[in-house]
Length: 342
Image 1: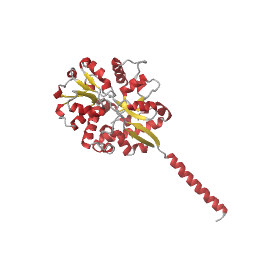
Image 2: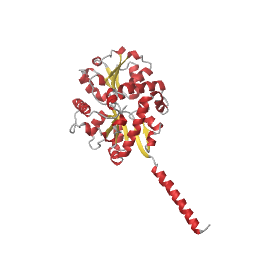
Image 3: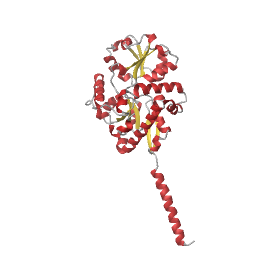
Image 4: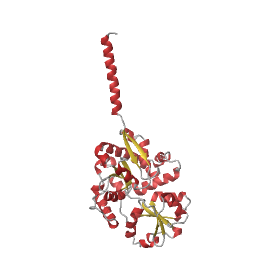
């Protein structure tokens, strides 16, 4: 083979290798650290489905998902920059931003259009309506998102809070204490506490679920939240994350019976019937609401969010000027309105 032929062949080989290297770089996955607000339970399915169905991967994202210990933990994780995107309570976010003005984390996709904040009691303990809590013992974990709305709930329902004994309990013992009669009621997310009590053998007809949204607490619930530095540096990645999540959400709504399997395989102690009921309860009561059916997934009504901030201000003293809806919710990363329609 002539020297010219060798050089030509070597050049072609180098070009081919260069194309492969560049192609590999073009298809490199962008890492995204995501935090839930709680364990791998039924309502987490839209996120895990988006991973298992390859929706994130198709958008060029390598998403890792971790559990958390309650509504406040994702906010701290995002504010510190240890996580990029997370899932947490927008009302806790509003207070967190006020207390930490140097960390302006924002919500970017509303998931729980109607929050699952609730008081869960037992009829056999004399709890069937809000005023029944007077003279009773309420088990409430300090970092619980539902307990954070307790002052609003008492004010909206004319409850004399001084007549309610609050016992600070841990999340793991909350439902067991109510099941054992050590407390008369607890604060919690409706689909968590109700299902957990049933699973512990408490008869369904002995459980009272007072969904705060039905008793004067006019708030939004959990949303997808983003670290501001990450959003500023990688806005297209944030948009791709929401596009993939939306596919996972729609798939979950369409087929909850199969979607829940993606959660079960990540939780060794989870039982499919329990988590499926939990997921269906969340879809029906919190995610697929009349407002979502009319307007689509993900967005908020600015006037409604402003009113919810006003309600928060009734029991929380803002240290800084009271925020507007646009201060806490950024709609610029949302998929198109057409894509978000049910």
